Amino acid sequence: MRIAIAQCTPHHANKQENLNMITRYLHRAKEQKAELVIFPELVLTGYSIGNQLETIAEEIDGPSLQFIQQACHELQIFALISFPEKNGNAYHISSALIQDDGSIAGVYRKTHLFSAEAHYFTAGNEWPVFTTKLGNIGVMICYDLEFPEVTRLLRLNGADMVLVNTANMEPYERYQHIYMQSRAMENEIPLVICNRLGQEDNLKFFGHSMAVNHEGDILLQLDSEEALRIVDVSLHETRDPELNYARRLHESVRGALLNCLHHE
Amino acid sequence: MRIAIAQCTPHHANKQENLNMITRYLHRAKEQKAELVIFPELVLTGYSIGNQLETIAEEIDGPSLQFIQQACHELQIFALISFPEKNGNAYHISSALIQDDGSIAGVYRKTHLFSAEAHYFTAGNEWPVFTTKLGNIGVMICYDLEFPEVTRLLRLNGADMVLVNTANMEPYERYQHIYMQSRAMENEIPLVICNRLGQEDNLKFFGHSMAVNHEGDILLQLDSEEALRIVDVSLHETRDPELNYARRLHESVRGALLNCLHHE
Image (cartoon, rainbow over all chains, first blue to last red; front, side, top):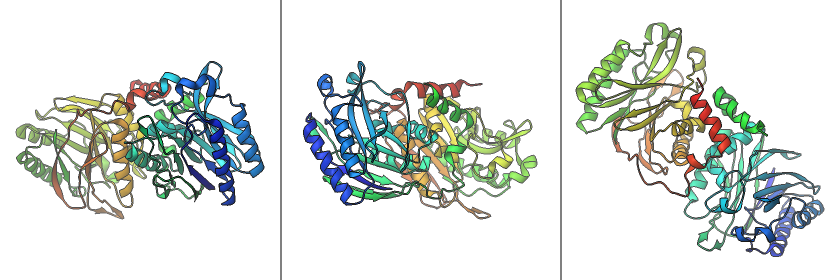
């Protein structure tokens, strides 16, 4: 699968500017024959928008996603877009996987909220995997990567790869690097992460977006520059038959995690 | 805690030679003021002893452990000794934590059996943590390290640190390195691993024993030489208040894992 990583700086609390930016990246990605573009966490609004959720958050069928769906349809390209989701009286940090026909394959709601996020947002309770013509894709968001259980749940739920939107800040560079490799290796699937750049208040986001294969080999790693970068990721490489972690996980533990998946 | 890592080559199927070797390492560790010595997986017998279990395995109160308990008592030192355990009609790959008064703090039975091990051994079903005057110590064995759930279960069960006996072979060097750091970081506890050297049949064991602190910093890393090396590991460093993984793990997942601990 040819993936474009859009390592960018979202405009803070300016959806129109971000929609313009997203559209530009989608065009550039299409020119480079990418099939899917991954953007950072909360690319639609920027990160520190907790106080503005009533006016800035949107429902899944809100105008911003519809605008991007239209662009994806016209360009025939997939996009993973993270946005603040209004869901009844609750708000989530969510990511929608938009397909090249403009439809939404599914939405993931961040299950692990970092630091002050829990003051504003409600954590998700599900680890869905989206069946698409590109493969079975799991999604997680930022702090989720730091809990090995999240990637495992997605793997047990059938993911062939995992995409990660993040707004990871200094000083957690090494955590992102190690966890990306470990999650890929211990689940024997590739992962791609897009981390944002820029600064909001005292938070400095470091980028370092990357792609790793199912053995944790680094296929692509960015520094801290604004960039659209292309990486080819294979979802069906031969696995080491001696490892087979998802199958050999202790049956009581595997059963317990599967219960989490099927619990509503 | 001052730990000695005894990176050695067990004598294949020769318990008497291994008891002599273990005793020599215990003396050398005591001279260097170590409080605990960690040995590799199946240090009592060597690794490929599946066909000889009826004659080589011992019960927890068997003569070999008793001999080492006596040595630990005389030297006033702890030792983590891995051995093939006879348990009724079953055999386990086990590790006994022997205390400096000669008593056994507890025994861990490997819960994830690698490759052909399952032909000979029965997997354990428990993730105990041993309360000692040195701290609350969890133990895992080799392939267990590759499943993040094992370290997590030990952490949720109260471990302040985790010790790993292993017989890890080429070509899994990078897996050991990455997993050691990831397990420490994602549980915010130090880990120490002792991997063996030498060759049995086509298996070449690479050593690379190491100690990492609760942030995944490498405190000590060996190459592939026979050695007794000392490392000071602090069990109660200040944790990053923003991370707090064991507490912030999604409640449904945390509950499921706690059920695994209390099951049976």
